[in-house]
Amino acid sequence: MIEVEERESKGLVGHSKYTRNNPFLSTVRVNELQTAAGSEKETRHIELTLDEGMIYTPGDSAGILPENRAEAVAEILALLGFRGDDRVLDHYKAEISLEEALRTRLGIGKLTRGSLKQYAKLVPAGSTLEGGLKGLVGPEHKAEAEEYCWGREFVDLVTAFPGVVTEPQQLFNVLPRLVPRLYSIASSQRLHPDNVQLTVRVIRYESHGRQRQGVASGQLGERALVGTKLPIFLHDNANFRLPEDTSAPVIMVGPGTGVAPFRAFLEERQATGQTGDNWLFFGEQREKLDYLYREQFQAMHKDGLLTRLDTAFSRDQPEKIYVQDRMREHSAELFEWLERGAYFYVCGDAIRMAKDVEVTLLDAIAVGSHGTLDDAAEYLAAMKKQKRYQRDIY
Ligand SMILES: Cc1cc2nc3c(=O)[nH]c(=O)nc-3n(C[C@H](O)[C@H](O)[C@H](O)COP(=O)(O)OP(=O)(O)OC[C@H]3O[C@@H](n4cnc5c(N)ncnc54)[C@H](O)[C@@H]3O)c2cc1C
Ligand SMILES: NC(=O)c1ccc[n+]([C@@H]2O[C@H](COP(=O)([O-])OP(=O)(O)OC[C@H]3O[C@@H](n4cnc5c(N)ncnc54)[C@H](OP(=O)(O)O)[C@@H]3O)[C@@H](O)[C@H]2O)c1
Image (cartoon, rainbow, N blue to C red):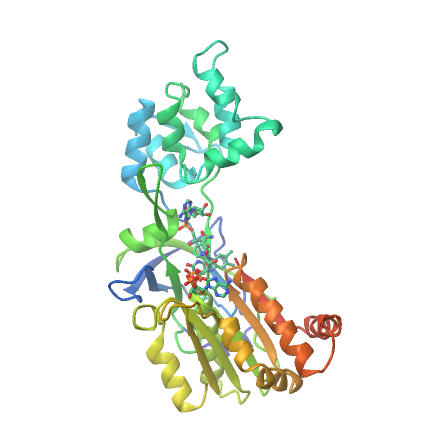
């Protein structure tokens, strides 16, 4: 593996023959639980090998092509009354076994309205099943269909409405494609030339009387042990980048797995001796159980790489404390950093956290600049234009 600088000078950066349609068969070299026993989370640190020429920049993500669980596939086969070695044509008309199709090509996890619609089309007119499915299809039943799909998978549909799929090939009309999952890269390639590191929260939940798990995160949590092969590719994200000016301060807000790209940013700044100040806001449920990369971040703080390290452990006291509460406590200093040209980054939960953080940021700007919230919105718009407000939220 040649050095990053050498590859940059050869113009190799960002180029690789591997894509989502032609992934690299990587080997899992580390798969470690980050959260402690007793945590409500299961968050893992994963390291995957790379091939020559696979280059990433902090801010990029890695795509994993997951596989459905063998037990889930076997259950579907049994319910449908098909054999795993039945032959089908995949999306590119290549002949494969039905078992391979259900394991690697078709989304048998989370149920979609599209699947309900296609499934209902297969029900013969006059069948006793027609009535039950009718109330779940068509634009007038969107709400009912969404409610039905929530927390259900294909196995629930086949159990509730059996005998509908009569030919294995019909499954390609009913089920969506099994698509890759993206994970923010948590490492700098300058420190780890031959591998990429990820921070993955394993999704497990119970619904409608069944234990469920996320397809990709469940695989990483249970089956992708060290030595296992996984098809992966690198995904460029030019909209989430450290400042070109290596002396510019950066403020990073990354609760939960949202901290992943900031570990990459900090490693990169460390490896290249960038002089800009760094401020990290990290949040999780409990300090003792859920503090991701605690030792590394504390060492970076001690060494001065992390100028400021503020944590918010939401469940260590009766009232919730979130990253935005820490921002509020230090809003004068935060505004002072912005005035010094700081870049502000947010990563993690798109639905609640990112919005709340933006509201708090606007407040800090309004108070700091003695202006109105409208003035603050203009200030933030100008920051966006200068690429000084970047978000990677999901
Ligand atoms: C750019 C980007 C970066 C990302 N970075 C990271 C990262 O660094 N780390 C990380 O862990 N993830 C990250 N993600 C999310 C990741 O891509 C996957 O979406 C995630 O791991 C879930 O995939 P899965 O296959 O395990 O779950 P899936 O099989 O896709 O299942 C997830 C679905 O399960 C359902 N579900 C979940 N919980 C419940 C519940 N309690 N009740 C009912 N239904 C439920 C929801 O519909 C949810 O959408 C990122 C996403 C993007 C787009
Ligand atoms: N698409 C997917 O299927 C998928 C898969 C994995 C992760 N995710 C998403 O990725 C994000 C990160 O997940 P994660 O489990 O690592 O962390 P998370 O759920 O974001 O939790 C991290 C910390 O943020 C806190 N928090 C909750 N609401 C908040 C808010 N409004 N503002 C600020 N902080 C808030 C949590 O506190 P409390 O829990 O105590 O409230 C916890 O302390 C979440 O959006 C999660 O749903 C999505």
